Amino acid sequence: MAVNLYDSAYALETAIRQSDEYRQLQQAYSEVNADPTTKSMFEQFRQIQMNLQQKQMMGQDISEQEVQQAQSTVALVQQNEKIAALMQAEQRMSMIIGELNQVIMKPLEDLYGKM
Image (cartoon, rainbow, N blue to C red; front, side):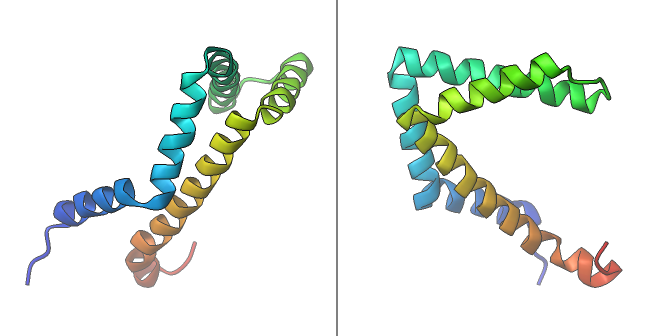
């Protein structure tokens, strides 16, 4: 029996969207966005994160000032209960995606061996 991998992938997408973890992530994200101050703080945090990741990917050095700014921003956002809850929900979702990725990659690992 031929299996359409794309049908399975879309079924997995639907399952993720219906999961408790995804719904908790949605709720936490909605709560952050409902508060203008919290939303602004979170957007600033994400912008700093993206800038640092982009620099890393391009092989550019990250200055001590940028590291300190990132650390102080992280400390600030972690004190915000709504952002902290969102970050915890993101972490749970990321762990699930990582575990799903391991399951998906298992046939290739079985074929080629672990890297």
